[in-house]
Image (cartoon, rainbow, N blue to C red):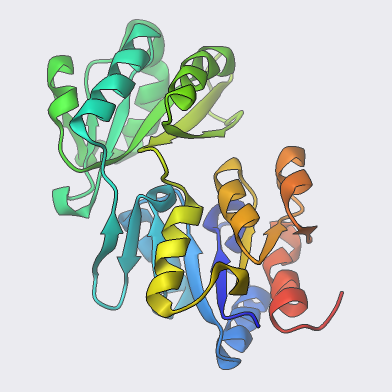
Length: 281
């Protein structure tokens, strides 16, 4: 029996115009009427997830920062956090700067979810500037030597050309660092850039949802998870039913249990009707 429905946000819950459509709203409401818990799992921070929770109009538990933070919207406090240790953070910063990339550190709610950056190398500056420019009031500039001492870092973001990025993230992944890639992104830089979210070893949406499910007394075999990105793969494979959106990359669709329509065709509603409410295709 399905007891927990977990939804990714971008490319999944939200349609291409970044809204939750009435059809998806209605399907989520019906799932809840049938006693199914609903949660969101995202790489986003709390401050950028809050408007989505407000769109839904319901209090739902959240798995944020790709699982590094499990957050209660009811108590407005963390249920679990996995910040970088100083040793692992120093390793990530060392490898990133040696590869001429600028690490962007995202702190958790205890630190006001600040974005901490140092002066980037010249060739990395356009990528960092594009990410931080709309968020200037959230940015805390520090000296590069002080980056490893920044507390409560839940995510380290790296931006750059794919080949440059993967050379660094492959090495870090082999050392146990959790790495999730996104790209190519539509920012106007040349060559086209990719992004990587880095976390402490063992952190993923699957680890966050497992903690949340255990807190609710729910087994992972009773979870339906829906997503579209590389960061969703651990969760799609750990859930009882892992559903990939039709707009997901081919390698994500290939590793999911099932594929539904895209986020431009209310794919989340299809997933709920088929795998939560049991209405077939």
